[in-house]
Length: 259
View 1: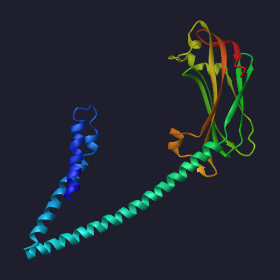
View 2 (view 1 turned 45 degrees about the vertical axis):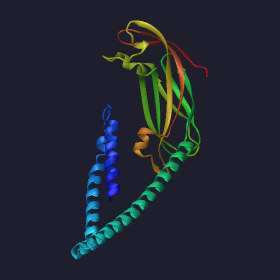
View 3 (view 1 turned 120 degrees about the horizontal axis):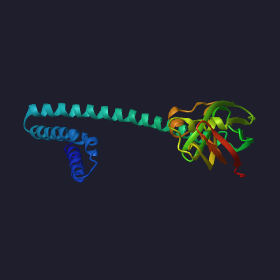
View 4 (view 1 turned 180 degrees about the horizontal axis):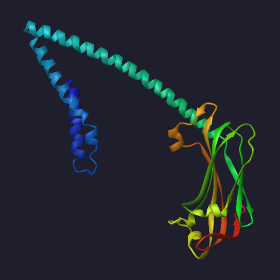
């Protein structure tokens, strides 16, 4: 106990010396438990040693040493039992995590995916985006379609789909008046088409995504949906020539990437 206490105090002192001039000394806070454990360990260990020394000649000290040893035995037994249950709990948690990782890998591999999108152009008025989801897991999915200029998202739409068996193609239309509506906001997005009283020609990315939300084994966990979604995407570029006045963005030319 004395050795363990000295080692704990020494580890904190070493950490203190190493981080004394560092800009980030937060580890001194997180390891503060070391001296709080080390000092009592040293004190109890020394009292055990002193009682054992006195027990050689003092019957009262011998009786006290017996009580100390009995208490130490009970403490060790409690720690052993607690350690056993802790180990069992860790094993259960490890099994649950392994099962979850296997489930995540299976969903990522077998979920339906957007492999390619097709864009039909209706004059200079609207576009229709169509995609055939691949075969895969039946379940509830979120279909999202967005059109952006670089990092600026001009238009976005999402809907939930129930896909089973051979899925039907997903099709969605968007009018250019809706796509460029943000250009008429008091604070328009940063895109060439949003410059008033000017003509511009620029490439816009049309991106579709399909995200698995729930399958036969249950819904996707919210934390995974937020940080590591089961998601596939496909995109295509459109070259739009626009003329913008004070009220409207007029599309006067549309050309799509042939790939």
